Length: 176
Length: 461
Ligand SMILES: Cc1cc2nc3c(=O)[nH]c(=O)nc-3n(C[C@H](O)[C@H](O)[C@H](O)COP(=O)(O)O)c2cc1C
Ligand code: SF4
Ligand code: FES
Image 1 (cartoon, each protein chain N blue to C red):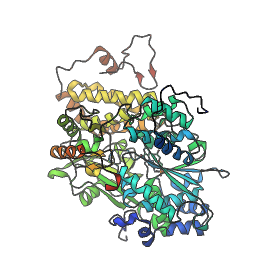
Image 2: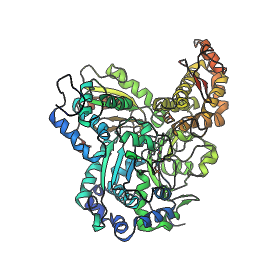
Image 3: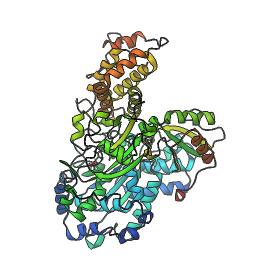
């Protein structure tokens, strides 16, 4: 049993490989709590979400309270508690994209997939979300997949083509 | 004046520059070697001071001066590099990391040597997925080649650089929000003082600098302060990366001497307004900075001149062009929506004020506006931010500025819009009516007072 006061009432869910990845970050910072965001990212990329049980296990590794992890995690609105689609795609709605039709393209993407912004397709392949400026305004109106693929300048046909491509699943970072 | 020679972007057309060997073969890491082996940290600070380099992250604070605020007797210093780059329309930091990562690493190395920081954290926004991949590879190569690690160039100076990924929050670009986020907490900006130089990351003296700021440093070491000051306008020196997007033919990032005009950017670099239209207005440096009228397009985009137009400042030098078919109400809808979404919620005038502005603009835009709303918006905008002294950080000023500028420069258009866009189906509740008249929408015994704003409950329209 660990030396911390945290007790786990459910079976552990983080595999050893994930725990090791998190622990490898600890020497980089003067405090273990600083590993919270890296740990959330590691767990998120493994499960495509951060369930409550995983939060508790992160807290245990970092010797902080689960509420501290939950507090940080909930601030960012980036980490869902239930799994996202295989690819998450953000459509930008900030100024340069908006001026070139960004808001309408988000609507178009959602209509094509028969979902609302923030939802995942029923086959679990795609999650579509709005985003504020993605930092790829040279592509405005732009969209970004969470594997790093950037799209734009988009029009309705471009959005449809993008969705088809993204449905095939994520690509590794080397291919960018 | 001599022809301008780009330095920050000089390698951008060379994809091989991602490799440390190529970068070295082009003269790279010569400046860091020069600094670490022939200069003292204080020499470097003095040189950067002499160059009058001002921070490229938005506030334009003199970099050398910031470095000299660190306590002389400090034992440990941290460097945080601000790569959160979330100000709408800004993408120059991404270009710097993706297209020439070693120039950036060399800048970090010299900056850390000057400030005696042995650990540097690059806080990079999550969305820069390609950039982080390139940067982590470049850091590993730089370490293997002896530019990072222990006893660099035999100077006795040690440095490790770690990448730290954000999670999609604009406020983590504010330097103390960044520090809190780095520490594993919610990105809530801290009250200053203490300033990070005295008590920053992990309660230790800390420097926060923008990516472009540090990318300038190797060139200053290599070419000297006079070279740097030979470019630009008074009090705004050196090369600058400008980004231009929106209603233009070519959306680009270009390096130019500090102080070019919007017209020059638009005509010489962005290929003019798209669809053969005319320009109406521009956002000069990210939406926090306000709005420029077409008639102000020949004002130099530098730290000083731009303020004379009523804009907040140069910001990130991210210019967004709006064509003559753009409605100011849509611009306001976009900016208020952004800030209502991104306010961290700590300060009531910002949390409630940004939400209130958004709802008011949204109502006007959908046909339920009244002329008095404009005064209400002005009142709100004038009472939120560091400028009036009601909030912890500058996000609230950034939220207020588009409103202030639009009301000063486009009030006629907004009044006209309200008059001609009345949707009869739009019902205004008694509460909203009371608010717009500056009265309490609440029973008199409820106290929800917000300094300078008034009563701020039940604003849901
Ligand atoms: C709301 C807000 C957001 C900011 N976002 C960024 C940002 O994304 N990148 C950045 O470098 N500076 C940003 N800043 C400015 C930083 O607080 C800080 O001034 C800057 O990083 C200092 O670096 P410099 O001196 O090299 O410019 C932001 C400021 C505010 C108030
Ligand atoms: S001004 Fe706004 S964003 Fe800044 S600390 Fe206050 S609430 Fe947060
Ligand atoms: S405004 Fe859309 S990517 Fe920047």
